[in-house]
Image (cartoon, rainbow, N blue to C red):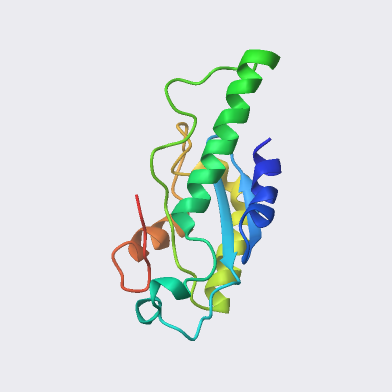
Length: 149
């Protein structure tokens, strides 16, 4: 069900393409590419009427809404396990990928993430640390990384 709605992002939002994506036991990782924006124009230099592509918060809100609504229908009609209060956490992490090296590194992390579930910070039974998580934490405060919690 989650994968179905992930794929529909491209048809719902023009100028958006999905990239690497993985569903983990209690979260997802994915790359959304804004192919509708002109990378030569700094966002601060565009007027509001020149905005191209869909803003990430709108995409994430739509994705969470669609998946939550379908999950609620599954609970009612298919007897899926119910969830307590919220299906998704309130916020999310975002990172602007600025070059091909970073893109490839993050794609590799996403693809290999299921193999490292035992090290994942979101795993309640974690038995170590993922080296990418350590580097990821360092990006939160650096000028190269932009995150929202």
